Image (cartoon, rainbow over all chains, first blue to last red):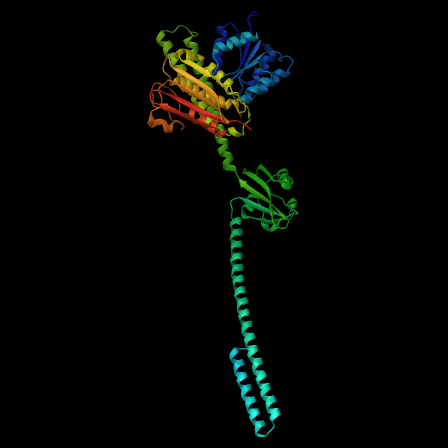
Length: 124
Length: 419
């Protein structure tokens, strides 16, 4: 990993979507790390200590809420900002995510990819 | 004693008396003759009296017999009616148990026997706490017994996979005594249908939206030349791909909304600020408004309209549908006027556009699902107004419109103030 580049960990099981976000982040000169499920996401976060995490909620094995809860209760990863990027868009889901410690909640079907980049830069 | 017999005896007595009188008169004993005659007359009178009384008694007897007969018939009818009722209860598809005040089983129908896997002979007159239900786990049986103290509804699953709704209630028998009633309803199919519906919602809502979001995003990135240069023609096509995927995303969201349990009226109610909601929706559509160069005039109420209690998110959906339609069906450089005012005990939202209007022959279908004004230039799925109507009416409000073909439309909705 390049030292001056910020590291973004994407925890997303949909391959196509994960590739697109990675591409967009790479074009904005972020170093991208990927995890295809919640468990691997937690392991990579602990091991690699990224600068920011983009987290999907509907994940196999461990769902996004559980991943978020684990990350925020672990001293190693608690301070890493987490942006939720999901199609779960009910008021209850959004409130739950923010209550668990997410820095922001973006809805996949509505967000603009440039918006994500701006959000990430604002948190970093 | 039959009437005729009485009369005959009477007659004989008279003959005897007369004969006796004649006998004594012949032998010159006058006093005795008169006595005997008097005696005969008295006997006759007595017999006549008795005959009358007996007739009366017979009538009473006949009356009593008739009453008894009628009672017997009614009793039979009542007994037959009772049998029919019990037979009907016995054969209901729901399981029914009645318990007395000592929690002893006094009635169990066929369905309850089958559902619970018990035989009525072993259960009747037993305290329910002593009865083992083979199909229910012990903790569930205990829960049923504990819940006998009050009206209660619970859902349990039997060992055979049947989902049961168990309702306990009380029936007042004679003002003093109560019978406890347990009704068992098999809701397995209902649960399965609910499960299918939830899976459908999940599939439609999320599994479709993610790839559609990816398509939309990739088209945008290609258009932005994130994957290399594109020519004008390619940009145009990519723009259309984005719009098509947005349209599908919007359809899946609308369909989700229309199949959800639309119990809006029982959802969380909080004070709704119609003006604030309208402002936030107008913000969302700023780009579309600018693109079509539409002039928007928003007239706010000078009166207090804060006493509406509803789910703001749902009311926002309605405002969004109406504003979106006013933009979509408007002409370039057209006008939209929005007004929120107080009308008696209602807050009224009004939105007018200078757009295409609604043809007369399509007006009656406007609030139906999948109904759209015939117009090839305007995209849509025909669910927005149907959903809006459901939402407004669930809060006891109204939604209606005025429109003239090619002259624009005005849509209204009103919501009652809370007391």
